[in-house]
Length: 388
Image (cartoon, rainbow, N blue to C red; front, side, top):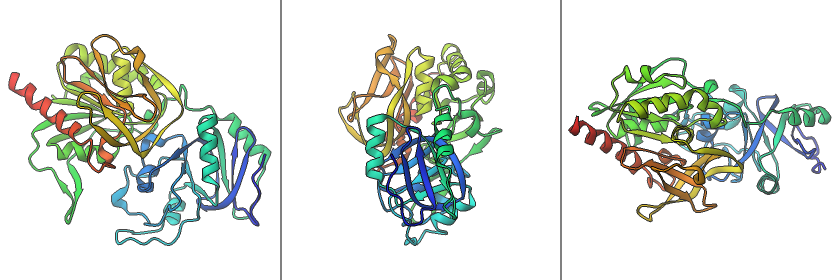
């Protein structure tokens, strides 16, 4: 069933079940196919579009005021947008923010990302929640010429994210150092000048703000590609190892990442800290399993309970797969759970400084409820130094 068309639609969103939404296109022209998810965040659309964890996905924003603060290079989480496209309720207005350097429309167009406005995002979000994240085709044509049958067929032909290793597509091509710290008024981003701990970060799709948080916690960070071996990690003589966020099916990425993590666990006593896909990689290495979620968790208002302290943190999340807590082996404890659906949001090894969380503690929606995780990582590295 097709949505009632606008007078002159210049974009359309075709779902694999045959549903078609018409709207106003902006950004780049053309066509793209991906999985459709929704994000409930009220701010941070630029960070969301440049989050590598969104590879292979088009994002529906439930908050209507998208584009109202423009864009700035300071807010990019990676060099270019990674999300395949965006769906919004209202056509973006002119930006009103002193940090803005260009409009969202221009930014998307120059970076080859398609967007559609004028969509009933409430209806679309309900459909995603009820039916699961659908496969879709998004097209933008200023002339309004669309082959609907071909678009629906393209959506049905999308392979989906299950079994898909996307970390290789978004990881760095070579190693690099990182010393930039978190943004602070009035100087903006400053540099780490007196690091205390050497950290190797495995880049499965790392966000810049995660690396900034590591630097702000006193870390000298060296970033390695996702396919790095344990020998390559240890060649840097790290005090700790960080496993980053990233996109795709953790089981697929685990084909090469899990053996590396297992070797580190078996041959060293290094502190290991993982986030998002890194959390899932660690869980797989420890013997647990992951599952595809119905529609995933995407937003900046997700309550997560720390089972140790009873504290509830307001977190940022972006994941379509989850660790199955029922498969956690002996010696691995569940540390955090989602208060939305009870799904696993954190684990740790008993008696070892090895832990991970599903949410993004660097995103600071609480505003800084979860930064203690980076400080805990630094404390674990300092404690190990005292015993070596």
